[in-house]
Length: 97
Image 1 (tube, helix red, strand yellow):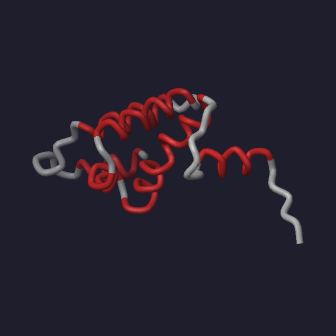
Image 2: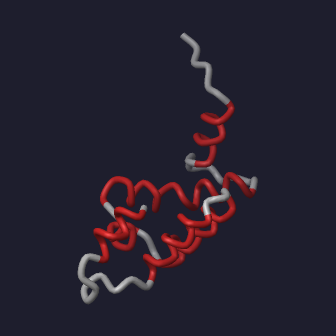
């Protein structure tokens, strides 16, 4: 049985592989994949529990590169968010995301 992958699927799989990727688009997909997955799976605060500030900055840069400036700005806000002192911040950011 053979699998017919679309070009988009092959690009996505290449970007998420354990092998070094060379193209700028692949690097951006790789940079945003884990932070995005954390946000989608566990909410915005989870990304800072599982990613470094630099990882989150790179994800934001990737969203900019991919033409998603609003998502890039929201992602950058996560780095300096004061989760403890601002009531409802996580819920608002989750809704915004």
